[in-house]
Amino acid sequence: MQYHVDGDLVPASEATVSVRDRGFMYGDAAFETIRAYGGTVFAWDAHADRLERTVKTLGFVDALPSREDLHDRVVTTLDGNDLDDAYVKLSISRGVQPGKLTPREAVDPTVVVQVDSLPRGGVEGESVWDDYAILQSVKTRRVPDEAIPADAKTHNYLNGIIARLELRRAATDDFQADEALMRDTEGHVAEGATSNVFFVDNGVLKTPSREQSILPGVTRSIVIQLAQEEDFQVREGRYTVEDVRNADEAFLTNSTWEIRPVESLDGIEIGRGPMTTLLARLYEERVEQLCY
Image (cartoon, rainbow, N blue to C red; front, side):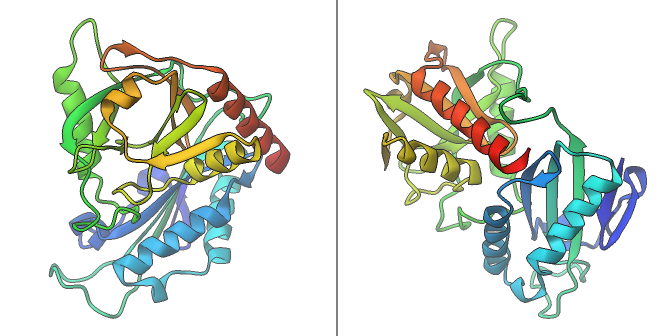
């Protein structure tokens, strides 16, 4: 396996960054997790838009390579590993600077592309997950937007890590959740540790509002668009954990999982239903149409 580090393909075992890189020292970096299907980088513009917004928030957008340059680096990494269907992680940090919290104005960014193989997607593909998600609500709250901008996808994932550690501590021989459901500081459902949350209530597709402290996922946006194209009623709002527990069906979204049904929340069965099934099929058809 080869990774792309600052303009060069290098063996994964040699793909390193400096210990003085601010992405390592402070989490002062942005990243995107992307799917490649059939050699096509899926939803590239949406990911590039979000990456640009994050880097703008971090204050070094002027040092960001063009999206054409970044796309070329991703494609070069896929080609260099002979991969058509893959997981792609594109990271850009503020680069190597002295160990001071205040960054320098001059920025020489570090850009890294990592890839790994995934199964074929689309209509004839297979899921990367083996089972429906077992969801568990946790005490860890989503960091509020007033502290760290919620729409910035940075290397600082401590919030989600702590939530996942809660799951590990709560695990028993008979029960092990694989995704944490986090609430905001007001107690409303926000998102999973690495996913957005949807549920169906009396034929209405519901998901936490972007006005809350959530990271608006690319897959989340695609699913909402697909639902609206089918004239489904979509409602973004503020919901309780109990609302999700009582749902007719529920699912999680992210770029890797795509649409992953929720088997249960806090031990209460929810499961897959007709809307989840249809949206998953429509998502597969969109991937098929655009990438294969």
